[in-house]
Length: 51
Image (cartoon, one colour):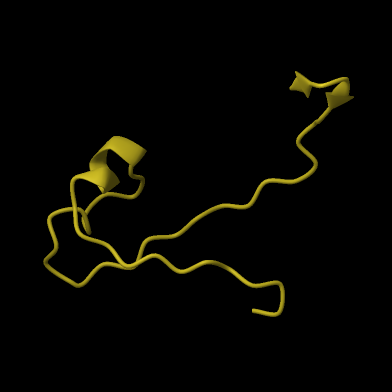
């Protein structure tokens, strides 16, 4: 991405996990899309560098 004469490049990416209760309709999936997740109620946790 380039803006105002500055450039950026992805350095590292981190995987995300979803914790669902047993019996939740999405719990049977081994992978989920963002579209599937936006249709369900969720609590988000922002990762910290010390966890």
